[in-house]
Image (cartoon, rainbow, N blue to C red; front, side):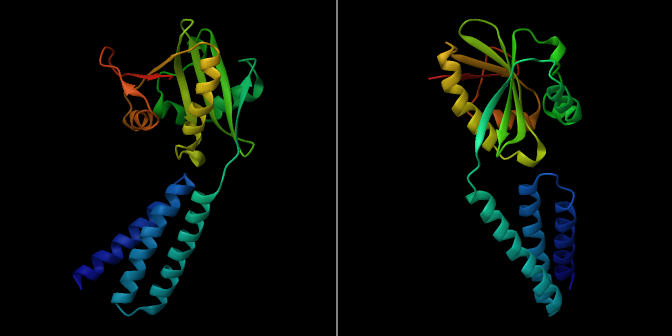
Length: 208
């Protein structure tokens, strides 16, 4: 019975944790594992209402996850021509605490030659891309931010695919950024940055 109890607790904890997720994708995955585990618990104890209910929830999670991964999003990059634009300021203020979790040093006031782009995903402002020009061939990416509901790498993959063409046309060949935040570093490596051994916490992406 101790094993059965452990399975029941594990399922309950996973379901509870899933409900605290802001990211819909993470919510669905964790809820799937929690519901499947709790369904197994019901089956082992012959508690068939528990088994059927949680099995049904697991099937619903699979259905929605399939839809999320099959959905083709429409992306676009929209330049912000004025860095004092009201919506830009409201966006940064609203997500300020979340931005600081990944880029603690980010501050609009400290930037020079800065360029802002909203990442629209199905016409929803899903992210903000900010860079600073430091030479005719190099920029420093100051912010590559995705809001919690769209933090699944799709934003970044689109930005760098589209931005490569855009930036290369402007003559830029090298992108660099800095980070010591574990989650942000993981993202940078996944999106194609390489650690620069010459600079502490510096990551570089060469535009080919």
